[in-house]
Image 1: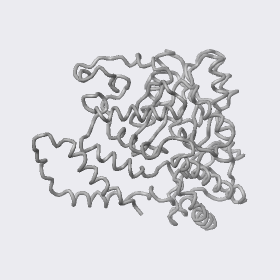
Image 2 (image 1 turned 180 degrees about the vertical axis):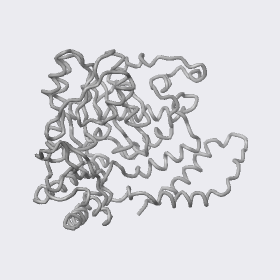
Image 3 (image 1 turned 120 degrees about the vertical axis):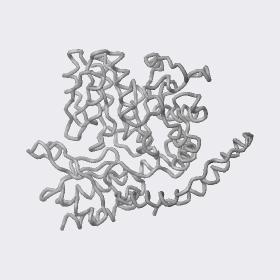
Image 4 (image 1 turned 60 degrees about the horizontal axis):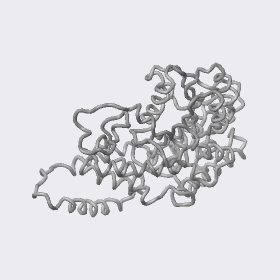
Length: 431
């Protein structure tokens, strides 16, 4: 079940890489003994995991990277470049710039400032740090269904933070946002395009309109959902939101989710390249090899793995970020799978499926009985789901919260496995 062709391609590429340095005096790398035994131990330990690679794993936001990403990442580690400065990552820094430019172009930006980061948390930190520098002391605002990282980051930055209520589909309520904005205390609003709990897409057109009226920045946290801008089967509300991303001040997207990359690979983008002046600093040792801008000069992080940039560049070389292409078709298939599962849940009176998924995340709750028992029963049958505590209002319940079931159908293969997933879910529910 695990893809095994990559090691052969990697071996050939490693030989080609070594040939690039044939002009150097011969150097014999130290012999390494015991590798096979240790790797056998590693494999044994890694077996103590859920089968994240399999279509019957439909729980959290986990799937294997693309084989070319896996191989390119490994290949780069033989050199182990550091993309902080060109001294340590000349080729990989260039590949990072090219890859980031392609992501920016996907959102309609030709001019931009951006770079890769360790993940969505660091990428969002940078976006909110810039917002705080431009609007010092003003409030960061995000929906009550946004990722908890925004409140935590605001605390780190010592900026005030407020949550905005959502509608019954987990989307930010523009009327509630306007009530907060009227006092002029908001510096930045985080619009989430793909919440982690429900995959809900905040109404970006309305948020942008309020931003123009009240003078706050708009940051789009598309860490999970950003690549869905390429999908051709979004609903009208989600499509309207993604079509306006180009007007945001900053964007975060995680290639290590739908971008088919190994963890951790996030990306932050700014529409105005002039924000780079906010990063200005001096380094006594690292910025002398080139007059070209070093990525460390526009990043809060210092050392960063060049291997992440190499893997991302290689993946996009094979799967360009274009609508209708193979990469985009995978996203479309994932949403089809989510719509198919939701339709079955909505038609079954054993379940409450409160709203159609906007991306590829489905949430539902049993009308009677325990979500926890269904979760446990499905796992015994090798179907791995997730649990989420969600507002009772989503389900028409009087309780403040409901323990619901949640499924992330982010593998394109899920579409072919919906019948099997439903068969197991049906059995686990009946039992």
